[in-house]
Image 1 (cartoon, rainbow, N blue to C red):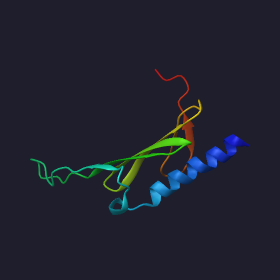
Image 2 (image 1 turned 135 degrees about the vertical axis):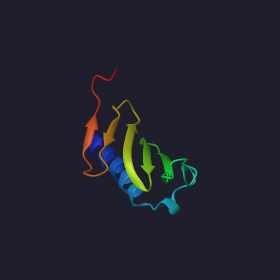
Image 3 (image 1 turned 90 degrees about the vertical axis):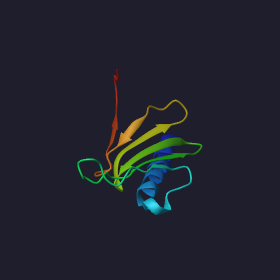
Image 4 (image 1 turned 135 degrees about the horizontal axis):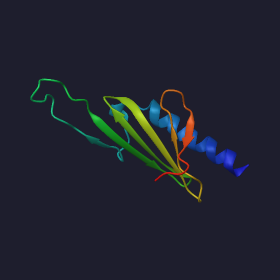
Length: 98
């Protein structure tokens, strides 16, 4: 029962993070502004790393050009960390990571 409640809470935090626009990112977000153009003339995209932590989990999100690339969730209390696919919302665990 606790795990189901925790999982619901963690996924709701992820959906809240995805719903925020880059301009409304929390103060904990650390946007890394890059130069507008490189030597080759291509425009670089803005990179944001958003870190949200509460009593149940730590969620790290990477956005490039306003598009979410990765979502990493580290539950507290000894539960294994997992990643959430930004496009489908599927969870995946890294089992024997080296």
